[in-house]
Length: 281
Ligand SMILES: C[S@@+](CC[C@H](N)C(=O)[O-])C[C@H]1O[C@@H](n2cnc3c(N)ncnc32)[C@H](O)[C@@H]1O
Image (tube, rainbow, N blue to C red):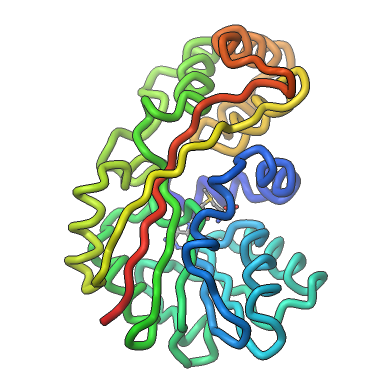
């Protein structure tokens, strides 16, 4: 299943759970936005905007004199982002498009290049990442900045490793739980050396990668948080298609596997992402 199919099928869930996921992901959520440090009046594009939370946050930073172009490959994600942006009075537009190939400045920026490009976990799904990153560079003005969050390796992210492995086992899915490293999927940019070389090869300079380590919180008794993670990820369609008893069985299995991470607020499960930064010369 490619990104358009997967996220098209999951857009309703992402929309419904957007605020809860945002608070569950702790420091991983705002990391790229903080690194980008957009200023009032700037033009910024949010790549793989999903249901629009970061586009709204960027909108409040650039203000009415600035512009936020929010772009996503899944039309229902774009509809959700457009709704949130309109409700928050963001000056900009949400549009459907494949960041890997479209003229991003033309479709999301009224034909003018951007000062900055932001992405929160939206850049790991390209079948041909070198072409995609070069295309993203073309959307920026000379000197324009890029900041993006991507996940580190699966073994540094038990919040996803454990949930996926448990779901695969209990649902009886006959395939690897997640796409393999190097394939489009949540961990395709997990190797920092490869990713830095990719960005440099695409023409970015001053490329850097910073580790962000902050727990992913399954709050309260953990059940709703575990269900959210399972529904929103690559196994979402299989998990959501299972009957209720089987879904409960998966959640119980996940929570007992994560017991060692139980804390006063819920389950604080280790999570690690990279914050990538660079700029167009
Ligand atoms: C993991 S979600 C993150 C969504 C959002 N940035 C957030 O943090 O809530 C990845 C998003 O990237 C979008 N996406 C994947 N490949 C894309 C592409 N080639 N062009 C545009 N959007 C893409 C998906 O549709 C999805 O909405």
